View (cartoon, helix red, strand yellow):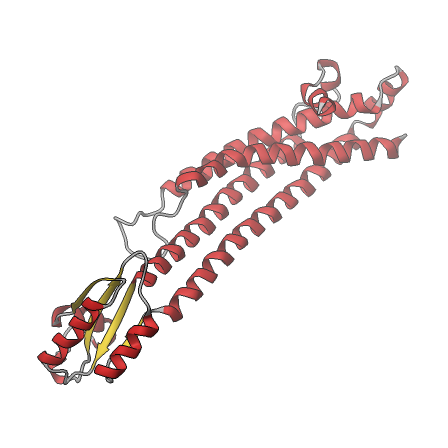
Length: 295
């Protein structure tokens, strides 16, 4: 820890080894900013998609649809509603009216299609409590008293959505790791180029007794500061770009309210810190390796 702090503190004389401007400085700042921007966006997209999938899975887990034949009489419908009311774990059950069923079918049949001309099944919306109900037990009772009734508890949709949420989060984390690896590789090349360009200065410093760790400190400190500054700018631009995305109140759809929520807001602030750590480790390794080769 002390060695890392010493490297970061730097030395005014040693800092002169690294040119304050030039192609390496601009490249490091640009790469760190671009990688931070991409990391902020990818983490936001992965987190948002995961939240949407989780929300849909929760809603599907608490909702079910009971489908009855089109010829179901009023007495049979009342009997079904009575069964649902007596089932533990069901908070509410209501029959969808013609307008609601028309709205559900209009994307496929068109808004002008009349339901009177079609044998449309009668749909009953079932809402479960937080504790839930026993779907198999309910199906068994319905099979005995109303064999034509079909209960769809949306189980076939819940598991794929939950699996998709997990995979999207892993994908976001994987993309972020790849971004960090690409940043480390680029900074390593930049540090090696800077060391090669300053070979005459390094030779003079060695002649007057400078140790390799003293020379490396200048490169590590300068590159780490540049990376942190570029990453901070890229993170800010990433957050600003996310604020320009449409919200759920502006447009409906799958990817609305793209961004961070709750504890996930730590990531835009953590990205510059992580970028500085990556730069520190990459530059230190590159500097010490290159200096040993030049010995």
